[in-house]
Image (cartoon, rainbow, N blue to C red; front, side):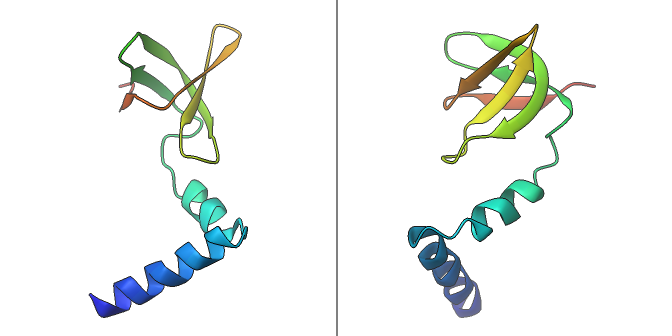
Length: 79
């Protein structure tokens, strides 16, 4: 647990200082980018391609010629 906390602290400090390496590393591990997904939000469900994430972690999906970004969504991948 101590090793995890030390590693997390180093990542947190890097991110807090403006280093984008922790974000880009996390983004590179996202398995849904480029795939068809359904984003279940409190206001609506959006089906589309997961194309990116914002700096604060919100998923950006592309649906019918428009981008949709929502912070309050649950994601399922299309079968």
